[in-house]
Length: 113
Length: 111
Image (cartoon, rainbow over all chains, first blue to last red; front, side, top):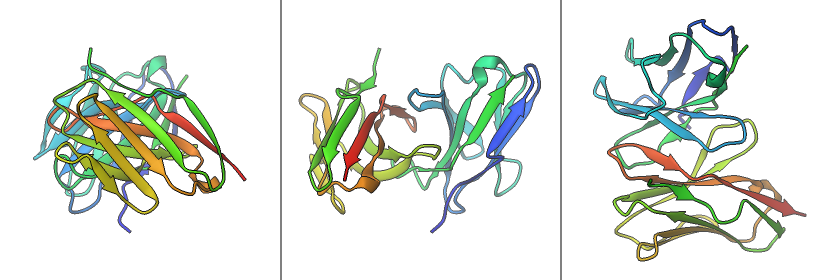
């Protein structure tokens, strides 16, 4: 069964450092997403990406965040200067179309120290 | 503001019982809803979805009911098994492609 894969599974970084979280969405999917989940809290939307551009973003997704699809398979989330409060699980997801099943990856646990 | 919320944070049932997990939503413009299951340390796993032009949809052992009048969504799990123990989230799509998740309900199934 096709799946969304994320790397690394766990990333520890120092405050102020840049991090790049990587995702390989399901190959025939056209919509890509990043969500995050702070420990013990609900899953929060960050950004959606379609047709090589951001289609929606939340208030969380400020100037410190950026996304990129550098080639035909990878979808990345960059945090330019990490803060302690960026510590969370970051989930990548993809779907064939809008309002269709979004498949989630296993997540990257980001720990900012 | 608009939000999706859950009535019960924890639901404990016996193996074999039927489980019902409820969700209230407030965005009347939402047209697509999904139930996800999340096990510890894993990503959300799709269970079942429903569009706003339907009021009921059945899957394998699961049924989702949508009541647009009162903005209520429920997930029914038949013959609950220990492997069903997880946190269950409802999610709504009100924006173009944004899923807004509820707070989650922990389902605990005792053998």
